[in-house]
Amino acid sequence: MKFSVFQVSRKGGREKNEDRMGYCYTRESGLFVLADGMGGHPEGEVAAQLALQTISALYQKEARPLVRDTTEFLSAALMAAHHQIIRYASEKGMLDTPRTTVVAAILQGTGATWVHCGDSRLYVVRDGELLTRTRDHSYLEQQNAGVIKLERINRNILFTCLGSPSKPVFDIAGPVVLQQGDKLMLCSDGLWGSLTDAEIVRHMSANSVSDAVPDMVEHALRNGGEHGDNVTVLAMEWETPDAFESTRGVSTDSIMDGVFASTIQAGVLDTGVEDLDDAAIERSIAEINEAIRRSAAKKV
Image (cartoon, rainbow, N blue to C red; front, side, top):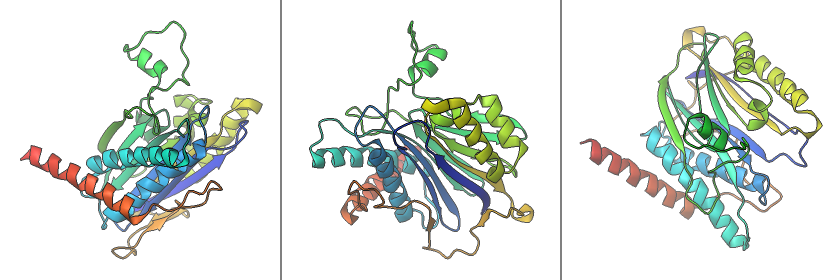
């Protein structure tokens, strides 16, 4: 498996940057995750970090070196992250819970499968065109889809997220078969809120991800102004083995079974968040395996 990858997070006009992103991979599989901690609630950066830590910890337990069922895994891992945030708030005796959006993608073989909750987006660009992108879980996008009608629309009003007392709503898509040169991007609303889809596609199509992403982020920060949002982007370009020439590329061919590489760090916050304990990981893995077993039974 070979791909080029670039990630960056820049503080906008907000008091602090509550966005988090990262990726990890085995010889035959890769996980990409981005979370945007929600303002208006306490410790959004903790919720975002917990989402990354939980999903990546479960992935590193399950990908040996492949995830058996990516759809079931992403569904169960997202719910495990949600429960971990709720548990954190309960242990801290918090009156309000930390909350975050999340978007995560798994690449295996030649396919990509992803899940998202909230308004952090995933884009797939192919041959200079937008192949697909996620639909936000916001009142504006739902109104555009003819589901909800409101006289005054605010795109910042989300009806689902991780960490909320109510069960999160999420969407899963894929697997989408990737072709050489396809570019997949995860981003917070700080990017797409300041750039149109057409501008994003133009940037992604014109250059490699290592050049396109910094350029897009600079444009988004400039358009957002002094009160603009934080801007976080994680993007990759899919490359076939015989065409692998990127100087910033990742080749997983030399990775041994059971070995992982990761940019997702645990325990890096000043809030006391530490690695998930083994019991919590094992409980979540058991839930994932049970979901996969039930799914397989239905297909028989």
